[in-house]
Length: 118
Image (tube, rainbow, N blue to C red; front, top):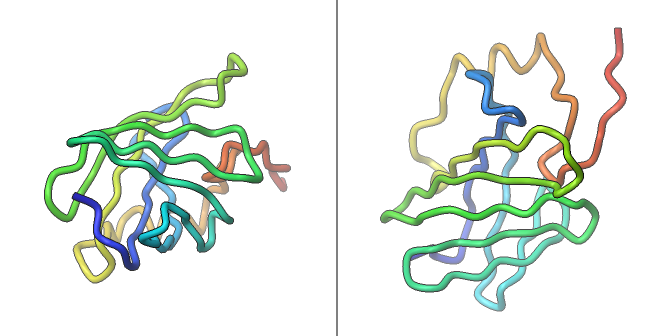
C-alpha cells in the first residue's frame, strides 16, 4: 500500500537501461505534488495509477510494500515507458544519477516532450 509521504519516481521512456528520477509526495487526499508537477493517484488492491495535471502521461503498476513498478504511456503513439517508485530514503541508483547529468530525457515524467539541447 502506498503511504502518504515522500517518494522517488524513476522513469524511462522507451524502457531503456537509463532512468531519470524526480521527487514526489503522495498526499492522503489522492493528490501528488513535487518535481513532476501536480497530479492525482489512486490505488485499488495492489494496483497503483498516477497521472499529472500538466502532461499526458498515465502510469499504472503494482505496489509491493515500499516499492512499486509498472508501465506508462501518453496514448499518442510515442514509445511507452517503464517506471519504479521507492520510498524516500531507500536505495537510489547511483549510476542513473550520474548518467542523468550526461543525457537529458526527451520527455519529462509527465510525458511532455522536452527540447533536447545539443
